[in-house]
Image (tube, rainbow, N blue to C red; front, side, top):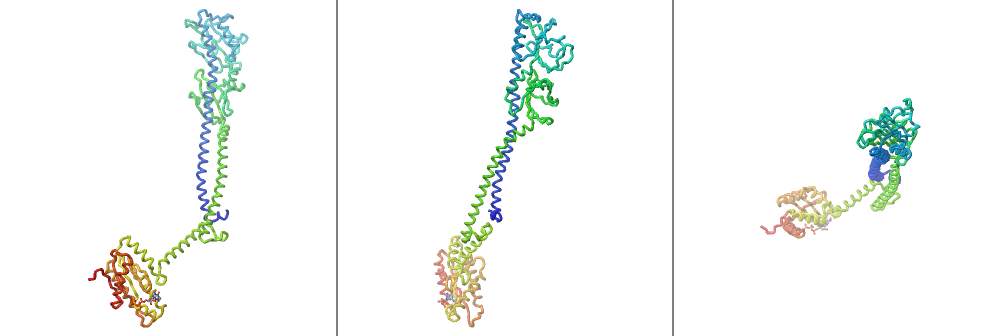
Length: 512
Ligand SMILES: Nc1nc2c(ncn2[C@@H]2O[C@H](COP(=O)(O)OP(=O)(O)OP(=O)(O)O)[C@@H](O)[C@H]2O)c(=O)[nH]1
């Protein structure tokens, strides 16, 4: 194989194989680009879906439960016999609040307040509140049925100082059947318990959804250490400006998808670190690398087989040209082309020889027949002259055949000298020659023949007393074939001989 790389054939093959390889490279590039874009879009779409649908729905389920609890209390307040006496342990509202605190994981404690200014905390032992109306969860102006959710607020102790503990509360004003405000009820929500619901969410790519309030404080989070204690970076907050959306944070290198619940304004967030994101996207390219390597191995194998095959074909061409020995001949494409060129030249020589008279160098009778047929097809006007050397037998007899041959050669070369466009000369046989004049009139043909005849007759020969002349019969084609035309020219030639030789006689169909 190395032998072929060194020669032109090898280079050509390498070029062809490389060109064939380009579409594969382009395909790999396109596939890489497409799969990266597709994978990026898949990752973002699944994160967006989890933030916007799955986690959001889960929160709504809790909010619905909270809502139903408040509605139940409000429906009790609307009863005719309802009396919202917060100190009455057997009162229906107080009872149902107790019931909720016992049955639900949603609530930590409750605070009841009536329009007489009385209030009560359940369970009682938690009561450190002196004035509920200045607490952030106290609903001053909510309409009937409207639930008011607080941001994460600091719990105050009995002295009114911050205890360091944070809570989220939901509160509602209560109205009687006459739509008069009779008090309010507020629950501190058990955010740790509600956060457990996040664990049931199938979150993609090991990401964990969480929820923050409008201050950015984690109000639902799987990690209890972060819950109600930590916040998302403050520069994230202005970016939560749509109902749902996405942004990439350069500082934390996080991809952030969010979805905002309108009431309460809880922001569901799901994040993915950029390192993890890149790892996921790039992992999808492993398949591409595997396929590309497999294809590459297959392609190299195919290329080697192809090169072997082409080399074999070239060898066979070489054998076909000259039966060369495989071990001694060069098989590069240039040497094969040279051989083909040589062979073509040989064929052309043979072709020329088959139509040329070797002694005079003029065309032979075969070529005359071909040319004549060709001119007839083109319907060209033809004058044909037949020339016969005078007394050639006696020349041969007197000076010998070699001199006779020399004279024939001279006639050939002198004819060629006089040849111009539209005239062609042929050795017809023995000492006879045929001249064809194309698209010329009789006068032009006669002029040519007589000039030539005169030149031949004036030539001086080394041989003593040798004088060379020829006689000629000229005729014009009407409809005849070649042989008929030659016959007519022959008649005129005979006349020329009879008239004393060394002259040109024109054959006429109808003599004047
Ligand atoms: N040296 C030589 N002689 C040839 C060749 N071909 C034909 N001849 C001779 O040409 C002569 C032809 O003579 P003829 O045509 O019979 O008569 P002529 O002597 O030419 O007399 P006229 O035609 O009447 O002038 C013969 O002697 C042939 O041998 C050739 O190739 N070389």
